[in-house]
Image 1 (cartoon, helix red, strand yellow):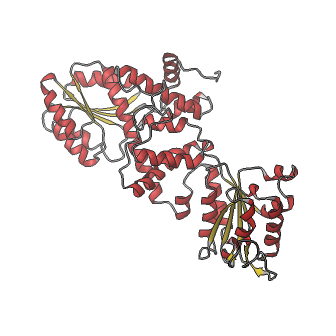
Image 2 (spheres, helix red, strand yellow; image 1 turned 180 degrees about the vertical axis):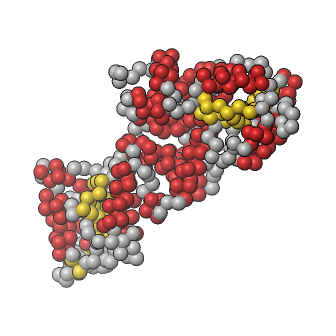
Image 3 (tube, helix red, strand yellow; image 1 turned 45 degrees about the vertical axis):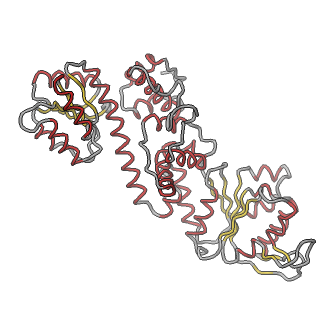
Length: 454
């Protein structure tokens, strides 16, 4: 069973050190206890995944000097100082220098354990964000376009790489906001047509009366108001790619003309008799089931089969929850560059909020949340709390006793993991790195119910 977290404990008082170590081990922490700060320093590096706890008053290297040395190794390392009543002023000064927290003697081990728990969670987020940043910095261009490590997104990148240079027509399937145009642009940019034009056309946004002219162009005088020749989207894309989004919205009469253009790779402008050859790749995108629509007569079956040479499916965000943190961090970095703002701290409460959401708007919705987060405007999915939090029964209250805040955070985190695992308990206690009994006890104490019977 994985420990709740790592703790390096330094105290020259043998009895206190032993008692603290024993109490923390009962709370499932892996404790390395030392009598001298010099010995503990050798165990510290930037990858240390826990909390450093040290007494302030010690012979040799004292707690303040240890704090400075530890923060030289990693400025984000959580350091908790143990202090007597007479050293509170010194401990406050240590907080200004970067200490995570301090605790005043005498104290119950449970109080120290609560501080360590928060420190471990913060450390986990710091290390996770570093790993995300390194992964994004080391990603290929295609991985930077389609961020994620879920099997569905990995397969999608492999399929794009396989067909990008073939010129084959492609049908892209995905829900609203899933990134269909991102996939289409990747097929264009990583293929042989990258130097040609990429022309995107939203079939649902064009009025029916101008659709044909937009697509095929027209000659001067072809109809009332056609005062001069116009080059259509298909002709403009010659040598490149045409992306037809929401293809299911195309008027039925134009579906027949589009089918002919795809089959013959040629068009005629409105009002002209001359055929113009096309060297164009067609990429169509839809959120609908075109096979079902064709059987119902809402979409031409022959056009569907002509477009469906290669089909790429974008998994919805709710089906790749392991990608949410990685993708959110990526989008927040993009927002930071656009708005020239620092990325606020990603707290455990915010992460739990992101993981518990269903994301009906997919990546587009996540991008909007990342933008608001960087701008300091995101108020959570509850919509009423302070920036970057959610004031609901599942979120830590903005004020009140520490025990109530901790209980609310634990409830939100456990419920988010239960939702993520589909109610299965084993993935929850493994993800939270607590024992099975520990999870049951917490759920009973917090009034959390599960549908799983074990």
